[in-house]
Amino acid sequence: MPFTLATWNINSVRLRAGLVADLLRDEGPDVLCLQECKSPVDKIPAETFREAGYAHMVARGDKGYNGVAILSKVPLEDAGDFDFAGLKQSRHVAARLENGVVVHNFYVPAGGDVPDREKNEKFGQKLDYLADMRAHFADSRPERSILVGDLNIAPREDDVWSHKQLLKVVSHTPVEVKALTAAQEAGGWVDVTRKDIPEGQLYSWWSYRSRDWDAADKGRRLDHVWATPDIAGAAHSSRILRHVRGWEKPSDHAPVFATFDL
Image 1: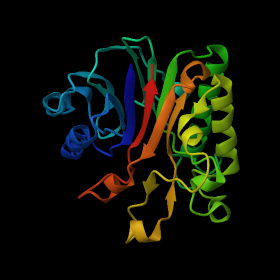
Image 2 (image 1 turned 60 degrees about the horizontal axis):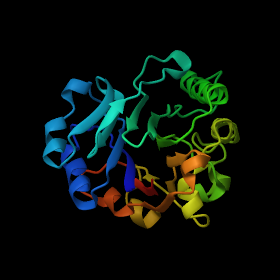
Image 3 (image 1 turned 60 degrees about the vertical axis):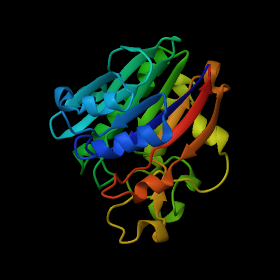
Image 4 (image 1 turned 135 degrees about the horizontal axis):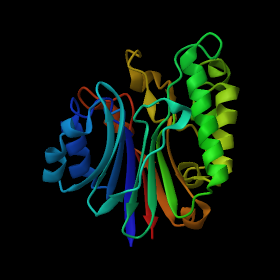
């Protein structure tokens, strides 16, 4: 049975509940993973999503920041969460679908503005988080799993608008890319988006600071869909819904979609 999965950093699920409902009604993914919900779980507007046909939710939340949620048309069960780097922040949640596939929803720390852990504690926390991801996947190699989320790193040269100009900018520095690649390789994860769209510039985030984000097009691919090798071959139809970035009062991220025939 095919199912479609999407990931979206919503940048406040309560503020943008209407946009989430619009996406659910317009696109109808079977599963939608949200990051940066900025809400305790009991304050997430679940009723709005139930009215759109999404009766199932697994989530973790913090008041005013972080937060991850998995909304689903189909039944799922809570599969726990990881507290990588010991941050005690709601940055991961997992759910198991009826077909046995486990969906991991991550919100990796952004890392602040200065790419130096000695000068910037947040950058050090980001690197520690990625190191813990790598260690976990090396110790417990995943199977029949999908990993999605805002990983806050654009790893490839064509995942940013200017590789040369962003080499010293947090999200595209060599040390971050190396750390993310190590975590990916430790789990054997396949980058589904780039499997389907192997060539060309590809972005999922455009800064609010840009006066005309669409015309300037200074984007980065920070949002990812990965799958384990045993199911990666079943993935297809990857796409990024760029136009959603242009909705009224939008998130600065666009949703990323993939379909799996499982």
